[in-house]
Image (cartoon, rainbow, N blue to C red; front, side, top):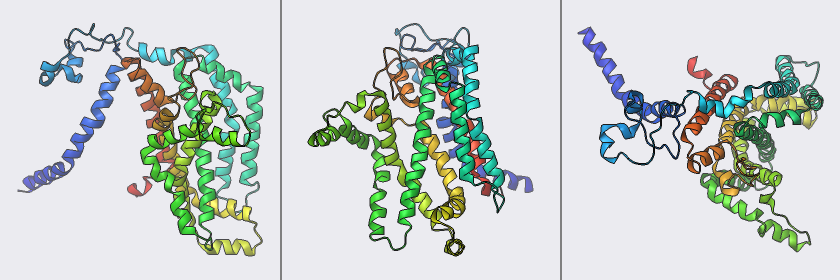
Length: 405
């Protein structure tokens, strides 16, 4: 009887979690396995059909299943097979990176960021001390200055050029990293400034401004439509140039210049994303006891001193998860960039466009060149990178810490 109750309990649990497990298998696990398999094949526009005589293909490829046998396409070219060598797609993407010049250049890039890592570790070590021997802002500033000096000595620009010669994969990946590094600090700075302003108790019309300032976040749900509006602003005959013309200034083709096109995508993304940081920081600010500020003011602490000694340390637990999540979503940015520039302007035949980020590059490779196998390898590499980044972010932000205590 006790054994039956144990089985009954197990079956009850499975009845509740069974649909979720089935959904995970169908919509998460299977696509990952299938994409990994495709990454080892030569599937492309000219080899779209599977070779169903191969056991693994027959298991993974839906068009080989009996239920779809009547709809199986025929006569569209030779069937795709496993690559020979097996890792040919991966070698095509990153193989040129493992050459002495590229590895040396990568080493120089890593060394350039060492002062920043040391500065972060020093600030972390001093964070537990009430009386810091050196202010955090001074340590950070010294780290940045040392990094800039080291980058100049090691010729950081030449190292980047050498890395980008390794292939389009590194061009778009580096450009996407740069995009994230530009966006995230601006998200935080704009969000912090507005949150501090809205946190002033006697601010006139505070409720009105709270509603108005959160509008971009609501508009981001239809990001492509909003991005098209921004695109109209910066067209050669768009709103910006018309306003400049009224004051006698000749406008330019903003979206045809690589630098300005890239910066425009950053501006639009900041406009859409700062409300998330503003709301997060505002909530954290309102949880800080007013007595701390009153005591600091009595001790003669300036506004900047209170900001760096009280505000920033106490909002850190709320801000770090927001930074991590925004970094991952920004790295995967597609709709906004595609609607504004389409990955352009062009930098030559066969070269990624000036705003061609990771997701835009993958979209073009799949839907314009139909390089399915190569993009399968690209997706696997990106998955490993983002999965590792997510695991690290969980450790850094301790989002799940409470679930295990």
